[in-house]
Image (cartoon, rainbow, N blue to C red; front, side, top):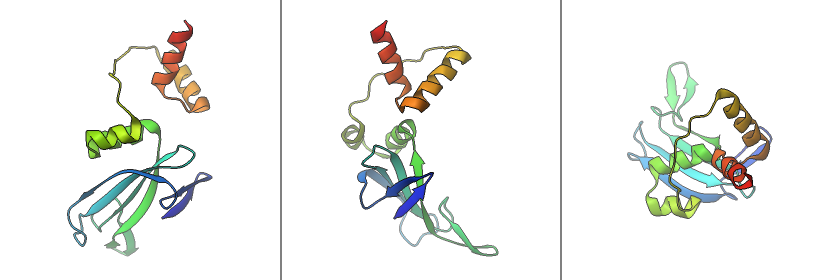
Length: 137
């Protein structure tokens, strides 16, 4: 599947498949399949398809639904969260590397706003931004 979203091309044929998961059997109204991809430019997306009683359903007539598919762009954090929930540890590590131990830090709203602004401008994760700031300190 190929889709342009917000000026970016997401193509399951050219992107790298990182992992996939599914539920039930094809033909079941509840059946779904999802696959996590990374584009050559480093953008993550989920390609999903499913039956008439899934989030991928499409309305084909009044009160009539059918299966469908779509591409959902993801940021790094969302891609990692999806992978944690749907992939085994080896597949996760192959896609993202060894996870680092997480630490919770309390920060002010103003500091969080600054971090979010830096994240938006640079595309870096909060962890990378903080690590660089601590290294400079």
